[in-house]
Image 1 (tube, rainbow, N blue to C red):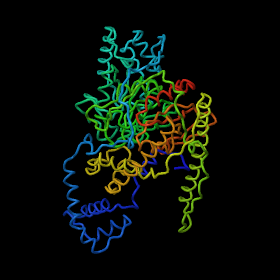
Image 2: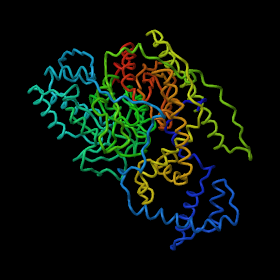
Image 3: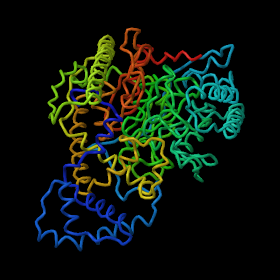
Image 4: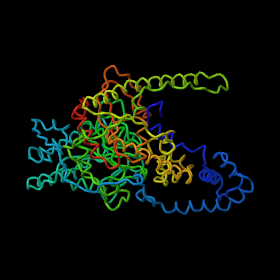
Length: 621
């Protein structure tokens, strides 16, 4: 990690393989027994020979007398697996434990105050399409003053969805009937003086892992195209209550990985040859291209951060436990987070204000206050930065290969290609680092004193195996039934393979990784005793760290790469989020302490007020 920029997809794939040299005995034994069963119609018994095979894979030694003692218990344990599988537990049922990211002694404010918004004064343009990239405060000013109607805005955004979807592939379903009814209701209420707030009448898009009654909720995955639920997700209900108008279910990579879904690949509006990254692919692409006023995404390990960077929009990953996930697809119960993807930091704050807080269903949601104040004195905040993320890469260590003989022509070709890709990737990272350093310079120019910090030295990659284990449990029936073959992607780094590998991850190691995670929470939280906000490179080690610890992050545009930028790879494989290329966006990330999301947004707003990078939009035809 210190010698290479973090790549979310590759990191997840690597993490899914964690543990193969550690105590894998229970999972390995079960898998070997299952393989034996496939070769024989009778249910096989666990034998000393199977235990030997499992022990070899696990890297442990079991004495002959110990093996005989274990057999009865192991057979009974295996029978227990079958009994639980017969329950066919739905994805919506969580485990009987609740993850809490707060360290011992942490205090959370529950005192709620009325929000303070920016006083935006907007002028109605001659053509309504010119509002496509307006911020929420600007649209709200026009809506409240009845200079524009919700119906006109809704029809404009739906028309843009239909215009640009053929090139960007960011929509699963346009919820037109629901949207038009909501827009008409909003106009009637505003005309009657019943203004609900800054989201009233504004069209938005929901990542298609949020349940919406009356419409498919596909999770982006083959085999789930016609899936539907009888109740709206809590976030959808809350945005309905705020008067917002849902116009689309936006795309996500299958089961929240990447940007490839059953209908194709969602594209980056800045470069149509690239995917929009994932997994909140459609939410970021639609927001970037001015096809919704805002969108909701989700993040488990980069799914707001990555597409927000690629598409040049502002994404807020709230503190774990701030926003209820009821009605959202579960991938990892201890890491999933819902959050807004918008044009500006204040937009994110306004949306978060509408969706946060307990709902009585998602028991991980804490009763903490979010008090947005656009006039907050951000200069009172103490600011640090992760020093190592702004330093040049260390020279790569020479790879020592064991030669078993001369390389074939194909092997030489693969080796040379790998070296070329490595050199190109390092060149792109070196180029992008200029923008990270420019952010520090701009903050210095704003009068910010920056304190250098270091992330605690812990094995974060090992901890992220928790995600894959939980995801495999969330989709256990998919693997067992063989329906995983319906998923779009079937490669070595994709869910079907990761879910199978995760079956070798034992309960003991899962608990040990969670204990290590507790250490990470405590040590990372101590950084916020020194500072209120931390500046970080987006595509770096902080991403898995803060997803594990539950700290909030806001990802904001930080300019466009110049015409001198190193070229991107000829093909976007999805394996590298920072592929770059001329005239494409870069980002910077700000972090904060648990439930300090309002201060985080205020600091990001100050940076955006100073730089205006969030005003840049893709040159769509």
